[in-house]
Length: 564
Image (tube, rainbow, N blue to C red; front, side, top):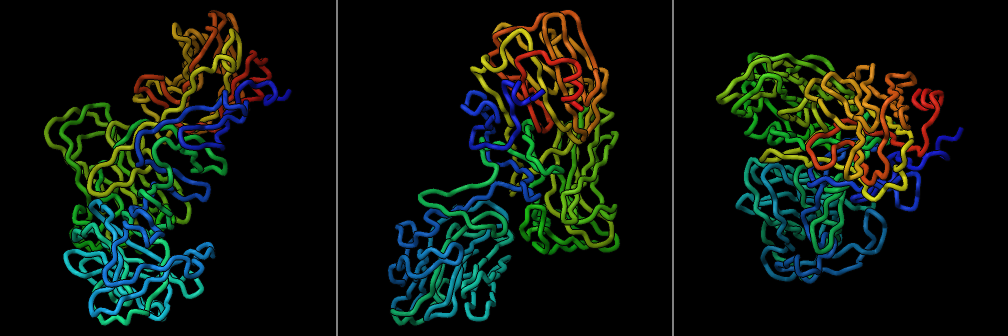
């Protein structure tokens, strides 16, 4: 039989946009799911195998240097469409020309930076002048100077580094980064010659070509164009996360709200990280997000580096998850729980490609303790470590997807995926529900009522969830079945539930796992929710590869074939 032809609703996550996951069938929009997530702090593994975070160009009018947002000091009004740009070849790069005064010569704008590492970048090419400069001040004229003939960059000021990247045709991307060790002002400048950092006598005719400016938290990333407002890209609020971790096909990642308590999660050189006989060199290696923002940590005899988080109570049975990315999979570093209460630990190592592994440990407390507790994450093994992306989460059973932080803890909003007005596709007193999922990295008794599927007809519900012993369970509307297969962590399962009056079957991975000959399915289902119990805090913490609904009860042989 053709399962696709017989299905009323097919959801194989592939097409999406803000607030929407498109169904493969039907294609008229009636099966599309509404998606929400409340903030811009999420990440995912994209199709290139890289961790994709939210990135933001904090500047407005990033390539409109004549706009009033860009102020001028002793320069002539920038000339538009002066030369082809280095990225697309369009004739929309600018010429910036000094005036004839003996003074500073620059344009400037006011982004708003948070604490921690920040970068300012723009593209430049020599004209009459063969140098330019960038201002990123800590209370003086400091930043970076760039030689557009030799490709040599020179930094000035506390915590600043400067670099140049040749992009061809005489163009360079000029970058200055501050590591956050000294507060920067909310102002950036582009100077002709050294005009953003010092004064000189201009001639009124000489200048440089410039294009595409960007200010951002962290290291410089790929250019993001802006107009009248800052622009963010990546898994921003309400954008579904189609995740490719361990898969060549996308899977819909649905997670509950979680918080990373580790501040400066990528900046191990920051003073928030306690160090003894340990040195940190920032931004030495390409991290799992594809940018050069991983740090090298060298620990000598008796040394350590750690981040300490204060928690004020711990309850027996609750868990805390520690995780960090490292450029190896051997035990030459340590993630540790410090002075947390006694408990049992579950360790895991995940391969993120390019030599990177995420190391995690989940400690489940076996005692209840009150008072100040110090949760620690760090390193104390002598040697050299390449590290990135530290995270501590409480009240969790596994390390969830990475949540980057700066100077404060960051909370990622819950993912929610649902559809109302869908009775024409999932209603009726018989049918078959199929889904393919991968379980989370650690399954414990705290997983009680982790929902796969929930539907509502106002007066009654039909739902499928994982109980506290990790068995799949249905409610009376789906036969009140408890499956015979205990689900395991980090494992893919294909599940089918067939229902008709007094005839219910549960198949998992090709084998019958439960049945019932008593019950009446409810009709007129009008709401579908994947991964959560609608209107509650009970969530699935798995990833969905497929969801298919059939308006008829498939045969047992079809159930076996579909889930094999």
